[in-house]
Length: 238
Image 1 (cartoon, rainbow, N blue to C red):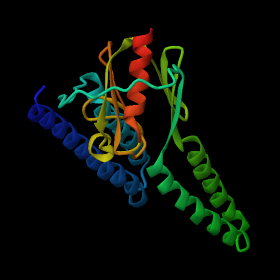
Image 2: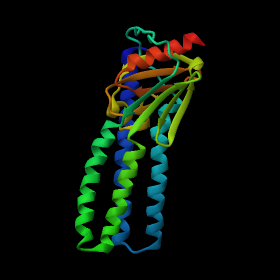
Image 3: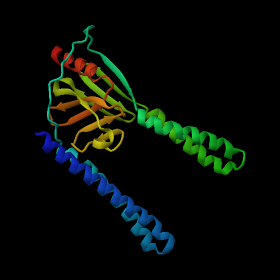
Image 4: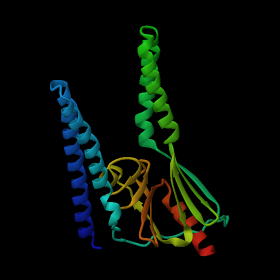
């Protein structure tokens, strides 16, 4: 695929995603406000239908690229370096830097607010402590992406999400620049506008893996060359 064609397709998909999100935000906000001014059970039902139905349509639009993934053009072959120790075991952790940058300040704010409200209004403090517990759980569960190679299987894990890829089924692996917002509109496990399944941490570099079944995975990594070398070495050794 030519660079211009790839750019046009991803730009179109990105535009459709943004339009869908904006339209849903406007409709859901209007639907949520309407029952405040019009007291009618039919309006409440309409609100629920708009919010839930719109959310289902939004998810469908966001997941469309996964049905027709496209691979960016290869500019050059990456040089592969065989690990010196000859190890077939690999373990690495990539911190979810952007998530932590958002969640940790919220934890600090809610901690201070909860303690302050505890001395003024205990009943309201319960809600703040519940929110604080929620953010702490998010920080703990989604703080890192773990990458492990064991017994010929590449295991990628982020909280409750994980994928296991057989090394023997990998067609190609190469280093890429990762555009968190441009391609994936966020962080975590995402579906990109090019149809790739991404484990996005906030790092600007990563690896792109093409499987025999046509699926493509992009994993944020601060040292993509290291991961490429281990995967390639494992594949050659099987």
